Length: 526
Ligand code: DUC
Ligand code: ZN
Ligand code: ZN
Image 1 (cartoon, helix red, strand yellow):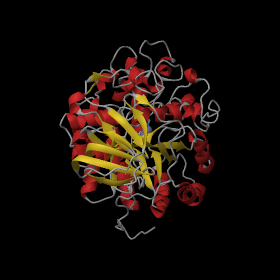
Image 2: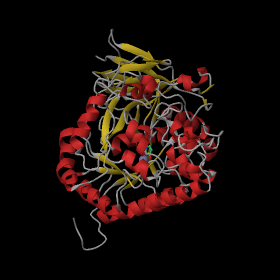
Image 3: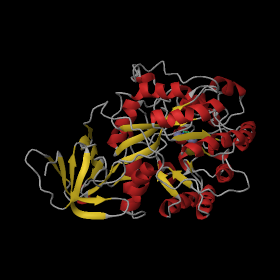
Image 4: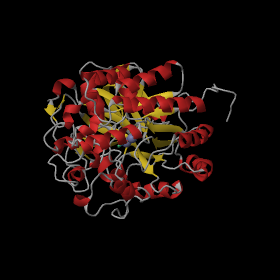
């Protein structure tokens, strides 16, 4: 048969099945055959998987790239400090330091751009990322924002990519006129809203405005659910008691903060009969609200992240300030019972997807985590000034594989479902997320288990532009040996061998998962 590439003798895993001694035939970047002992014409490239697992390339649908400056700064803990509000609201993202997608002065840039972030992605077995284009000025049209992100990403990406749009002000102009263009012209079928952070948060009324239009257009709404007022109130009162060490970021946002907002937005979605995804869920209480809604057959989806599965709040207690490395929102939880509930939610299907929420800022950078030390002279700084977020795009897939599958917590099929198949289905990436004829040949070939020498992760092993990893020291019992995108090897034996610019922009379809049900809470209809 006329293949360009044949991957031989793998243990091929999909979200439903495992086939041993299986070959995969690829032509023009697409999988065209899956089966034992495929016949190969001379000239085709062959890769021997030596019996190892082959899984679909990772699809990470929660990645922040080139959002460094004002965006990350606006993700301070919800401070009541008006000067921070004023410093961030209404300010455009400072893209001026990026020229044609490139940061000339990498040392001085605080986060990952499309080149470094996607290089890191492929080195960890992720073949598609969906990143965020963010409306920052309150009255900003989203069309130039989308164009802006296209310029940042074009020619810069090692893997395939698409965008969600963050909406900070759903004006009638945006939801009625620009949402249809977003879907039709740009192939963007999802938006994210925040219920917290002063510069970003929407009132319930605005959330309904957004959902009304999202429902009509088949858009999936992603929600950052935390109760802003509780966080503000707690932050102020903790500060008065000088309880500002990084770990008090968690004190200011106990699980009920997430649970209340999760329940509230589920109610809004039920009223509007529209599908939502609760992003980066961290606690058992919120997980239960999502589970209950799903049991009532509402189209409510859940996302969690490796930091909530593998870390606990003691990671924020390290040293005077080192805990800042693990400050993210929602916070990593104190109680093992929350972590257990997250794992249970992955196993029982409450969590549709596991994403990285890669939203890094450097630790040793004045505009990175060190901002937390800039106010007052406390050795442990102030948690509310620490930019929120962690790096994790490279570690997500290997962590779930090693710490999930190889440790016996989840099956290989469940691993594929939450890291690849479901993200692709939820966000309308029709040719991604499985190993079957017609799908893009996006593959991860793992090491044969018997040959793999376990190692403890250090940041130097990673390919991002960030000076730390929150997963430092964790043992990995396997790692992607090859990452293949559309039939081309882009990562092999620890080396990124793909080219910047190989990654393509992917226009997305509407979600392939269940949507509106036409079930209403009153006589009202949209
Ligand atoms: N929300 C995100 O989705 N990412 C980074 C921080 C945050 O609050
Ligand atoms: Zn968020
Ligand atoms: Zn995020």
